[in-house]
Image (cartoon, rainbow, N blue to C red; front, side):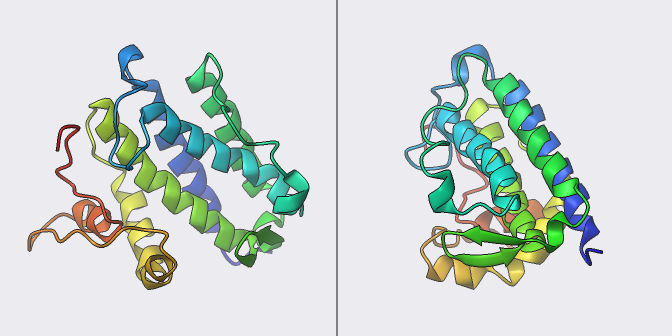
Length: 197
């Protein structure tokens, strides 16, 4: 029995939030810039869909080498929201399988438990949901409970990720900033980001 059932429900919630953001992308905004340097809206969504597509084979015990380049390239096709929904729901279902969080997952930077892997992709979903909302010109407010959960996990991992070059330098936020803005700053995001800025 997994000691971390909470991460499964949080992951599903983060996926749902991301899919809701994808549904809010206006038709003309797929090539709009995002806070992720060099990624437009479509590229960012494709990245997250790729993460979801990796979940099933990795939880099945396959290695990065065994999956190979099968998930490279455009995963969105002509219907990005539908492609995102299919990938997200399959990933959520895979994590919800009995014992999934206790399995060993072989990532490119080491072996982790399914629960640790779930936290990694959950956090990426939360932050990239904000990136997507910002790029699409939508309301950027995130689910407060997801923000709190992400901040709690990230507090113990930030130095490791930054030391590995996986996140940009912190962006300082004013005293009294919201928990969401503090989280974004710790991920190297400017909470006040604008497409032209």
